[in-house]
Length: 347
Ligand SMILES: [Zn+2]
Image (tube, rainbow, N blue to C red; front, side, top):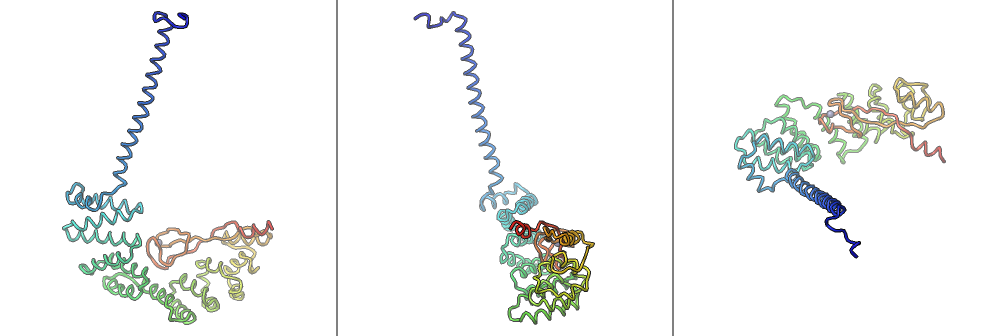
């Protein structure tokens, strides 16, 4: 029996004790490390949550009232939330600030910001109320007038939007383009006027001002293609290339197409006619060559450039979503694979 145990004087006993101690220390330091990591994570989470969680309305008001942060800092914080798309938090800050701001001009500026944030967040009625409140006190505020015009337009209250143009003109702001645009939109959306009559009025307006080509021809080609072709100015064709490209074959006027080189190239590239051998527009040239080689495996897609702010959008617009200017759209052609043709080729 004694052979089974190791005496404490035995050197082997010391070695075993040594390794047991190392094992205990290693285990302890491992578990301590894990415990510390968890504790640190919790502290970090708690710390980060302070930045995600806005104080309640009451807390926010008392924080602003205490004046721990300057007004500028609050405005900066609200602007940051707004940029991140967190409109609710930005609005809460602006509202609390307005309540405590004593300086009339500063209050006026915060109200403008609040109105703009309501507009961006899609609360059009609230945005309208804020801008009307501002204008009640300071009627000569161009930013508020411009924003109110946009709000009325989005609410489709065109007569009110047109009324806003008067004070803008009195302030010396050129609102001629907005006036033409609002009148054209109001006419297009007016259900009491027949499409034929609308087309005639729009063509007359276009002849007079040479503006809003995209908006007018989009409507004309959809509702009265014959009139659209007759009144089409060839210099506008490139800008309208996506509208023309999407026309169905029965809406084409072959005589007019044959009389213009760009139209001949565009519809040869589409495959509706065979009137061009090449094009100086790269995308059309490639498509024409592919058609002639009997390999129609590509097509056109479009993106839309605002000629004013140079932003590009994947969708067409009549008022730029970024700079809010009207009649600045330019359609741009891009080559893409024609999946329909490709799928057909597998059949
Ligand atoms: Zn723009």
